Amino acid sequence: MAEETRRRAEFSRIGGHPVLDLINTVQWRLSESRRGDDLHEDDDVIRWAQQSELITDGEAGGLRKLAAHSPAAASEELARVRGLREAVYDVLFTNADPRVVLEEYRDAIADADLARHEDEWGWDLPVDLALPRRRIALSALDLLTRASLAELGQCQDAECGWVFLDTSARKDRRWCVSSDCGNRNRVREYYARERRLRSAKQS
Ligand SMILES: [Zn+2]
Image 1 (cartoon, rainbow, N blue to C red):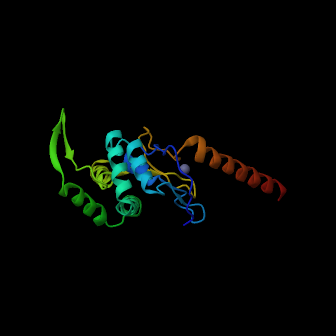
Image 2: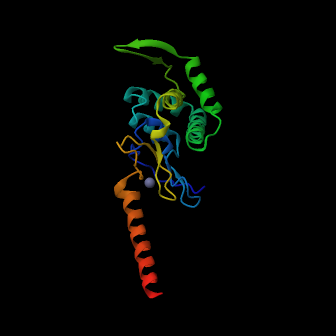
């Protein structure tokens, strides 16, 4: 897998669900030569979770201090978050066994308290380096058990691999971003059609 080393300032949020956005931290998932990972260093996990609003700014600050004190534990969390991300992708898009996701969920609630926050109940989790992964696991179970699988979509570009919840009325979303993969493929289809027409005329 070719790793890109540049740091992404803004992570993509086109998925319609934080866990689908997490899956989309892999660039060109379906291409062996172009594939790259936006979760490249420990801090990327914290920045991603903060931008996705799975952790607060205050929690992110606390996690950065913990990561500075325990770099080995922070690296291990990076690996586990990437592992959980791939496990969720495999369950949703290749029908793999959900066991890994379920184990991460059980781990997440093992140290959690159920508490009432204003008008809803939620999990109170300890603020340690595992916090982003645990919030991801809770969110993943929510997606797996509540989202309509009929709404799950994957960009039809041959290499992109980005995923999304298709909430369009006709359920006909084809592209991650219409102005990006959509345009590129429409141009490609146009020229392929022109070529076919030209060769049909010549024969
Ligand atoms: Zn795409």
